[in-house]
Image (cartoon, rainbow, N blue to C red; front, side, top):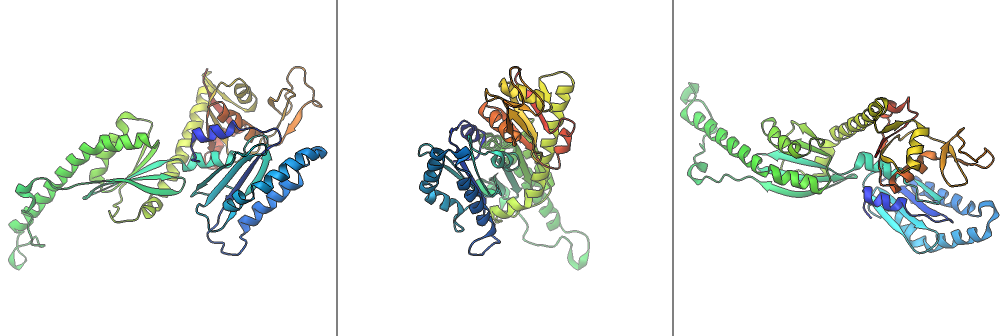
Length: 398
């Protein structure tokens, strides 16, 4: 399966009264031991799942969980095997039935195993915030390379090669390398001809870049790029940037006045732009959180704080849930299955009738995704924006 809002929404709707098993592993290529530490962590977590299967002494539930784990043995081994591709791996399987979902990405996820009524989705929500698809447009005198980046993997989409198309003057470039006349005197006519030739090449390249802007924008739209990094000579960057911003003003176009060799591997280009891309995404997360808080303060369709945001989630009014990805939230669940902050009692409930919920943040992620909301988990450098809101805010549909 792919990692995107649709697949996360589909996972969020999976439920099983006995439980859904979620297994995450982050393969560390530096750990070359026979049993690497990350695998030991997941094996220990799976052992805890087995040990806790008899929840409240329910022997039938225990038997169902242990049987499902036994049948999932080959799939779990594939997720944990050191020779399998992918840095981050995940598996989701309801105890009841034969349904199994697996995925691999090239970014870290977690090392854990969780058995709960719904899939455990926080690691994927984190990955979607900071590893979602983005583009690189590498501009050079040879044309344009368009590269797709998603969850740590880089792949070339296309090359739009530039070739001089005027045979009347293409071959007139002077062969001499020097610009000065005999004896080191004044610049020769050869130097002037070279400058005119280079200027004409640049003019043709700029016209060519103008002509391919719609194609680049089309690719960006089709691949869901919110950020596009444009690299190359400063004279050429603005042409491409304006084309990418024309139709989608909210797309973040990042200019890097940095030349990239047309022969450079895509993985090296991805590493080259990674710091600026991460910084741009952190800025975007911060801006989103500030916007939600501003709307809420002005009385618009937004909420801040745990109580109001949970209320909007219960009513399926949340369009975009924004949370501090590092904060732990706790609460409790009523007999009707709805969640409330600690200390808040709905009508007809008492503290003894409520069930404690130790990971309320995960439940809110599930509720948001299942209701079709977008979910953003703020990275640590942007999380302070929601400090007064206790780490939670949301844009509302109404």
